[in-house]
Image (cartoon, rainbow, N blue to C red; front, side, top):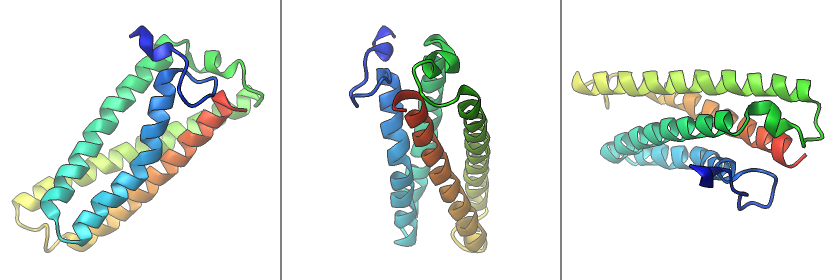
Length: 159
């Protein structure tokens, strides 16, 4: 796993795993939007597959990211070359972690309830409106998570 810590391809101070993570986190809101588009076009099977696939990939990438952070020396190690105040960056990191955790929990519940509702033949159908509202909230939270991750990347590896 030493390759993870080679110089990244985006031309910043970030290691390779951080550049890979950044690309995925930037693409995630667009991929979620594509999945929502499938649902609006009534391609429900494709929507279900894509949502499940994105959720699983997000969990795998999160484990990969956490491994890289902990093995690579942690937040303080990556913060040492930044011009941003470490306390301010740490508070922003806490903010990001809270948003990301809430997002993952909400997303997992939507998938869980969608599976149960589909088995009861209530989705699509009876629960479509509530599923749609919950999906919009999670899509917004995914966007916030993505924007805060991009900001953290900037704080750690560009500023």
